[in-house]
Image 1 (tube, one colour):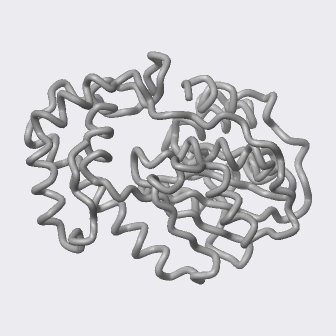
Image 2 (cartoon, one colour; image 1 turned 180 degrees about the horizontal axis):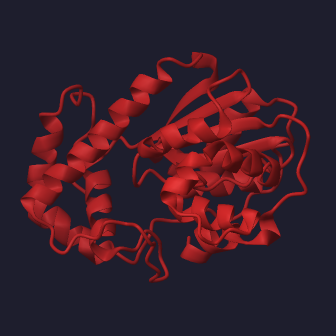
Image 3 (cartoon, helix red, strand yellow; image 1 turned 60 degrees about the vertical axis):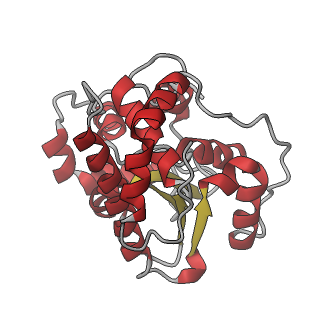
Length: 272
């Protein structure tokens, strides 16, 4: 997957929909970093289940709101104040086949709720996690160091780039993943369990289309999910060497940190 596919194209007016008076079903992909969230979005889009991406990150929300309103001076504080207006535009312009879908990080939840409203019976949640926390941590560190979330060499505005990978950076990264996962688990525990599914990264990447079909058939049996699949995205290759270096230098520390994390006893800790 490349930057243009995951971000650039979806910001354009070419993906704006005509709008609908109906209330769309909402599929919210709740993620921690480096759990194949963009690939999950790609599969949902392939099946006609919305046009999912990171609509509640300011990198998306600001340019969309500026274009939809014609006010180029809108900044992040103004966007926060106009969350409900942004949400109305979003549900109208980015719903497909009666479905709105989006990928969220834990830090996006409050803005998302202010934009599209609180949980209701038409909201469904996919919680993406990763069993191998060492690999996840190494992947996030590599992304923060290179500034490149995807293959292709493009950097994404707003990503806090590490100048060096230190022990403190490793500890902070592990804590960020752990805190995000706890926040999601706490929030999703308040939701009707019939509308929440846990999906492990490892299971999803092994068979992306079948994994998504299994979940969506359970929730939306009337939706046509027999569309022929296309080749799934593989692992990103642009930072493979950097991941090897990080794992060699910090793998033991990362493994120890996760082993000592409360509730981490059931997590595989094999080094990448």
